[in-house]
Image 1 (cartoon, rainbow, N blue to C red):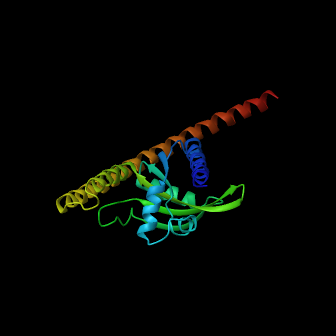
Image 2: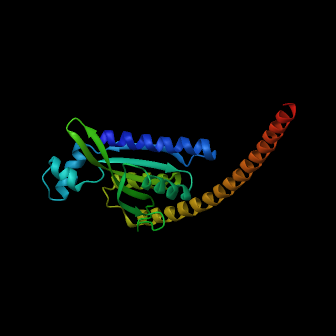
Image 3: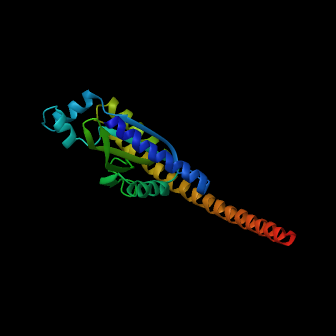
Length: 216
């Protein structure tokens, strides 16, 4: 059921991305990846919560069994995608955390959504929860590095490395803001170009219609 939920959401995201390419000559999504937690990881999480590893506890207490990660080019794209997901039919946003405007103490930055969507199975329709993370490429690079460091030191990271990670996070945030500003300028230029092409097309089309009327 988690696999089915991911496929349904990915299909919706792909449709939106294609629509943007056609209507706006721009795609806010660089790429999308998904994963389902392993049985070992799920059991470990339930044990940490002091719960028995059974299906009922999994459904009630774990929100990120199914995970979707959406990577964007620029910061404004994140909020555009969040808004689009909130407006999707059959998807209910249960929880959201904005670590973009307010990064974590470690420097981690991303936008998290916990959503629920109906999945039709042979036994009936079940609401399935999915965690969606939306971030820029720079944020994803930093998060990937932090994950590897956490894994190496088993989450007991030395203070010196924590300090360097925070410095890297600040640099990443600065880069994202500069790139977003550059992207906004490019988008404005693109809008002006589309306006010019549309105006030229309208003029030519009107001229053709007039000449057609004259010949009639």
